[in-house]
Length: 327
Ligand code: PYC
Image (tube, rainbow, N blue to C red; front, top):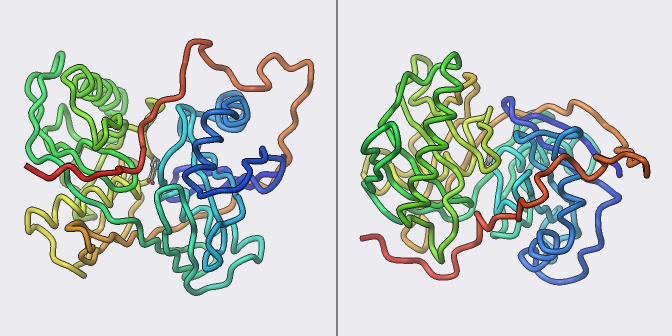
């Protein structure tokens, strides 16, 4: 299996160039569903330890169904499929440029949740224009074990997010364990108290937002596998833009600089969408780190990754079929 590893503002992506399963024909959403249902071992072998980690996103390149797209791509992590992934889209664009498959300019990337427009600025920098993002619920309060009442918004940016400004501690890298513990508790509370995205989708990402000395805001982002996003999270930034737009805190075309827990940054702006949400643009940098062949020895007991036997894939990121109206 031929792969290229990159990182986008610190967050890793593994693009699978060849050796992946045959997913047949159909839309990207149909092929992604087949990948999740029939090829869990393949996904685990690519992203689970010992070859990968909870921070790694796999990006399986597939032929696009639309002739106007440069590539089709299906994202997955150690938990299951991701509808979209902002950092991995930037990483995929830089990887395609590294391979000489795209040149600076505009390109379409077909994902299971829709077409993402990529503007490749240079060998190491790209902007992605995401799918329409929107807020579903404002000011949801959950009772969180050990934290008390935590208030936040539920929003969609290609994945589902709960975004809160109620901080358990400062958003410092030194507080990583505390932030991880707090966000895992918040996610468990949302689940226990019945909060979901549209169509019952699991809210698998939690964002804590706080002040920054060097950007407009800083965040800590809990990802589905329980790790944190090293980048400021492209889909999470999209969900944030949707919330700020809905609250009138940021206007169309205005710039926003979002910083991650490691201090890396994305430049953001949005335009209004056709369904009442926003169309976010996220600009960031990525670097190729390795070109490799993954080896699978028949005697390796962990060839398909180290997994708890009982771990079923989760449905965190389904494209909403119907939009529940915001209250
Ligand atoms: O950049 O959208 C993103 C993302 C999601 C999970 C990790 N990164």
